[in-house]
Image 1: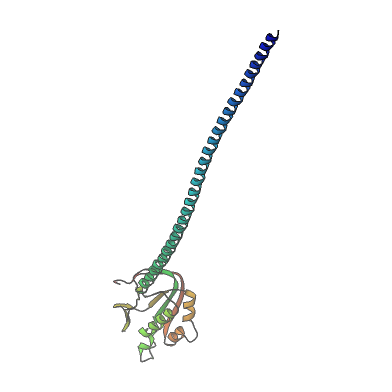
Image 2: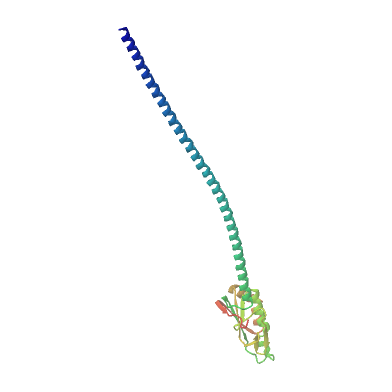
Length: 238
């Protein structure tokens, strides 16, 4: 009976030792599995961190590049603006040159001119048989000059005598009963047309004691008309 108890005690110890070994083995296995899982998680976290850092660095590079491109764009826009200003100034210069050229062509009588103006007609007066000098009743070149000078002073842009355009080198000569304008002869009446401000030129000619009064006192028939439109052609052979 004592031996049987001893056998049972030994068996109990083996069972207990077996249980202890199983529990200990389970604990070792669980610990190893947990450690491996933590290591795997650690590796994943490190890899993700490296990826995040790469993306962040790439983003910083892109932002820096964008700043450089914006600065370059700003500089290009300034260059374009400066170029536009230069072109605008050049265009204004060319416009002014073209405008001046047109004025000079007009002054030289090389282009047709159209606009408002006045028409002055100078005619010989009826001859008085009691007078000994018939020249006192005809229009002379100095009468024509007085009208032309007054029109120029009043701002006329173009003047013609009987359709013959006057220019910077024109001349007017009295040759008996006719007047020569640049070598072309015209009999009276002499029709002087001028383009410009009709009111200004009319007022200037009609001034008291002015051109009209002087010519009328010298027996010249003087007629003044305002015209809404007058056409003066370019000077022939100009």
